[in-house]
Length: 139
Image (cartoon, rainbow, N blue to C red; front, top):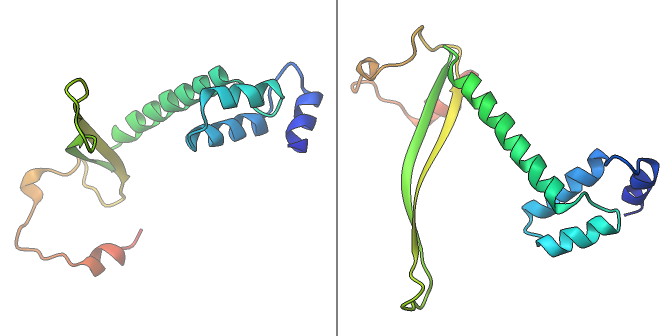
């Protein structure tokens, strides 16, 4: 708390990285809007709107990074679609559960990927792979 106040008193017109990082951390842990605003008024955190702007900027930056990584010839994109039903114990007529369709993905960088990427016809079902092959593979 003392460090945050000192950082704020030294740079009143700008916010320090400490206040932003602390705000992002508390927001990620579920701290409510009003609580963040109260700590912001005390000079301990940046405002809630600033935290949301930083999250959106990080999301946009990560989107661009994934896009660039995915266009590399040495990368593979793995993805999975799944469905989630978010329900409650006792259903009421006016509040039913919600159904979500979610896609997750990961870009995997590899050095032994052939030019042009991997194709379905490259799969050899006769080759057996065990867990030690995956975990002990060179990086």
